[in-house]
Image 1 (cartoon, rainbow, N blue to C red):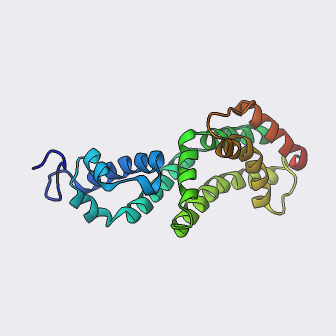
Image 2 (cartoon, rainbow, N blue to C red):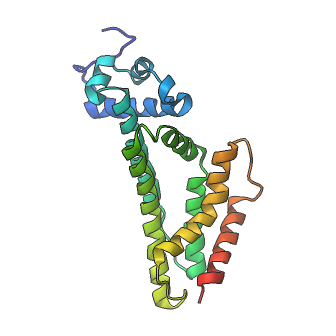
Image 3 (tube, rainbow, N blue to C red):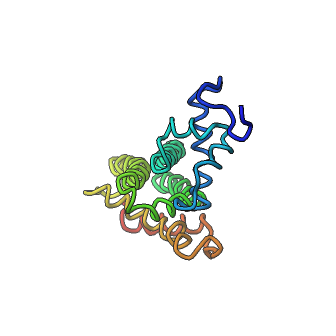
Length: 211
């Protein structure tokens, strides 16, 4: 067996392990080099599989890119699933959510994947849409649950459209921790810390929706 190409389809390494190894190295390549400059052969070599195995599992670069973005979305969903509220009053629960959301959205890797998806959106419209919708829906559902529960207790005013209210809070967090660095570049540091952004956003939110 050629050491340059690693184990092939007949290798004893489980296909699922091969698939995950390919996805991991492909994600790094697409994020660092972009879609056009990424080549299949180095990914296969880094993953320790033959190019024939890679093509057998993914079909080609376009299918591999789609699989990478869908895998990243699942990875993000697993991280999002860890966002759970703590006990306490409405402000404490909102702070808990907002801290987790701000930390997630401010991660450089998250921005890198979003940049990649946006750059290739015209070519991979359906993949990009699923990626964005899944992220918003998962975090949004968690926050909407908090808002409905706190409205029932009387800690928040009755909210006719919880999804709009959730979007209001998430938007106040997204702008400084995600969109500003996304546009200006990771080398431009936001002046406020995540903790300060969270405090301001939650206090502004409670001014409007607090009982």
